[in-house]
Length: 329
Ligand code: UTP
Image 1 (tube, rainbow, N blue to C red):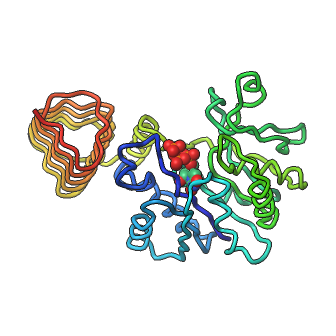
Image 2: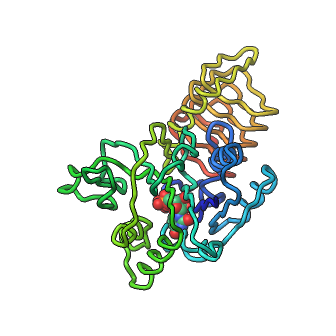
Image 3: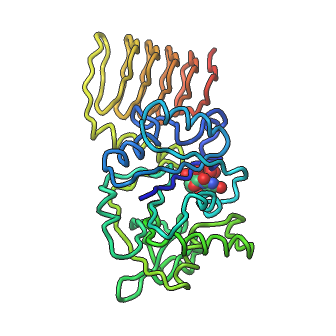
């Protein structure tokens, strides 16, 4: 089976970090988020080709994956970010016959066996019950359990209809129907929120008679914005349960400390990731991700994303600093 992973989005909600690196290369508990998805696909072994749909800075993703994984990748550029539906459609030339396809959004992490989701007689949409469906695409089901409707970010009056949010994992049995539907919405200029949406193509697939069911993804871990990245990171840090010791420092689990990191006279944790080659002195850091080659001295940092090669030498609190920033007195 082939998997399509769209990673071409501009990641606006994660600026300034996404100005210098694609969202999927941002660090979550010690590894770029895309690493988790590819690692799982290669371990589960039922996918034999991964089609990455890349955009701006796509070469950075290509170089990373080629270096870390020996796998059958295909990289296709989405030249204009016209929406997720358009991104998926960029893979159409790879499907010469009708086959099943797995689509995973690059900023969707999860803790489940994908094979279980794909062991279905019908096409499957991964969903999770949420409290605030307005932020998501949601599905409605009929009495038989088949999906009857997709609604992209439902407006308030519709909210009560469904709280099953689409989490970004799709197993579709018929690539012909998928690409036919994508073609149709693009040809007719059907856009939602000014983008060609995959949910609009899925609605079209329903009209064409495709049978779709849902699969509850309990551990769905969003990485679309700063707070969700920090929460997702905590989930994996707890799972990995790494132990460290630095003399003269207080370390509070869970945390991740990379290679060649110097930490002196500091309190680190909980929920902190410090990447390779960082230097931390006389500081208190909690709930933060610090990318490679950064230096922090005499600072108090919390709820923060700190890019690589940054320099912080100032008492502070919550920070969202992009790569190569300086924050000093
Ligand atoms: P999002 O809707 O989260 O968009 O895309 P985004 O650009 O990543 O982030 P924001 O909303 O601007 O902060 C969901 C997935 O679809 C991909 C993204 O890369 C992400 O993996 N995508 C989205 C594309 O590949 N192309 C597009 O045109 C849009």
